Image (cartoon, rainbow, N blue to C red; front, side):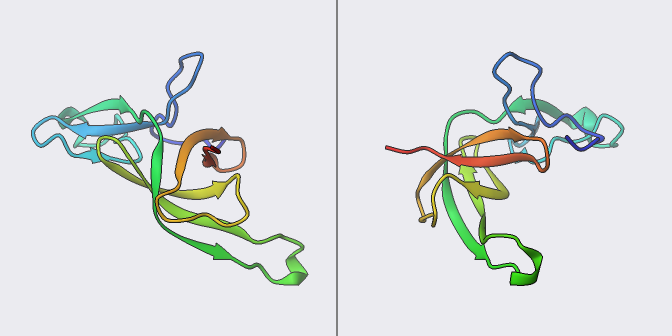
Length: 117
């Protein structure tokens, strides 16, 4: 996983993606505000819980020379509310409103996995 200046996942047995919540406004920020930030004292680190729904997405079609297959990127809205951008996995083509959960990923740090049925 990438070395980051902020926590990405909770250390619990079932890791949860982490965001920051502004103490004054309740607004969520992703990724979490780093401890070294001047804004850190105004935020609490909180887990991104539950399932999210796709707000918007696009399908990327890499050049055939790359050898990569098409993949989807999108914004997923989680309770909080917090909107997070990332790779969408689990279906050949996502749909607006489809449900996803955040999952750890060694290459990207996190991905969104479709919740099927």
